Length: 150
Image (cartoon, rainbow, N blue to C red; front, side, top):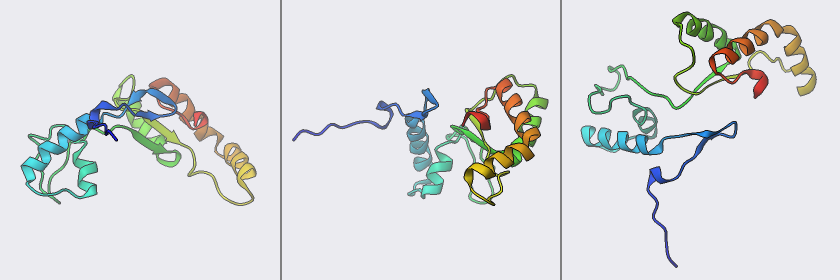
C-alpha cells in the first residue's frame, strides 16, 4: 500500500462551521515552534506548544518560565456573557472598528439551572434581556458572533 506524506500546512481546517472561510494557520504554528525548540534546545510540554505556538515574534521573545510576559497572537478570542460586557466596553473605548482576531460571545453563564433546559433558557433571556441585547448590538457592530447567533 502506498502512503501519502502530508506537511502540516498543506491541509486547510476551518476555524468553525460558522466560519468556513476562516482557517487555522497550522503552518505558522509549526514554524514558530521550530524556532522555539531551537532556542530552548529541549522538548516542549503540551502547554508550552499551545502558548509558544502563538508567539508573535518567536525569534526575539524572552522565554523565561515564570518571568517573561509573552506577546501572543491568538487564533480566536472566546468570551462568556458574564465578562464580555466589560471586554466589549473596553473594546469600544479603544476605537477599533473590528476585532483583530475572530471573536465569539458565549451566552451560558447567566443561565441558572432550576427546572429544565427550555424553561431555564427562557427565564435567563427574560431576566437578562438587557445584557443579551447589549451583547448582541455591540457584537454586530464589531464583527463578533453574539449569543443569539450561536
